Length: 258
Image 1 (tube, one colour):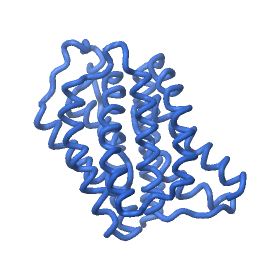
Image 2 (cartoon, rainbow, N blue to C red):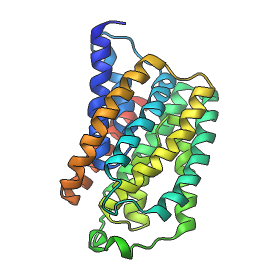
Image 3 (cartoon, rainbow, N blue to C red):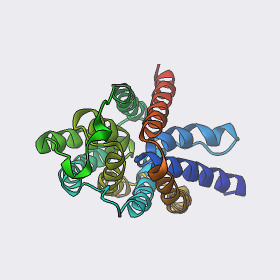
């Protein structure tokens, strides 16, 4: 393994984790295509979709751990929301992560494309007035939250993501949770989700450990830095960054599928 490979993997992990900490996602929406496409561009070893999803699963656990730690104070974390959605997504992500072993490369990429396209459409739906709601006045349909996060968990477990790129638009558009509470709580839910997908991937031998560890080191450095930056940013800017990231990823994946 040469230095160029280590530096490339580290930078992918660092950039993805900084953005993920800032906008409240585990980062697979960014790092999945980066791991798939960037190493071959530099003449480095190409990863298969199974390897990328395995590396992503392990890395997301540590990226979200760093993000949650940065958001732990200030009332950003909605514990009821985290409990209902966290348990459901953990079950779903384990089922998806374990079952993905039987899927083809094209099947995994297709699931990823569907998830990214759904998330992109939802991010562009107007979200009027949600940031006028005070944190202490937030209410939501608990069982709807649980069912939606179970579905997200299955899909996310398949692609080695933790599903935050879909959880965030669901929390903003369907459950009407304020942006900064959504970002913090989705990181906590994603942390729980990543346990299921990581166990599923490791138990079926889908993890390449050396690149995964390089990504983990990058995540632990970059994710808290991104979360600190996200606290200071305007919520409209955060929503726009996330929407554009998800849209760009969806377009790239679908061009490859088609």
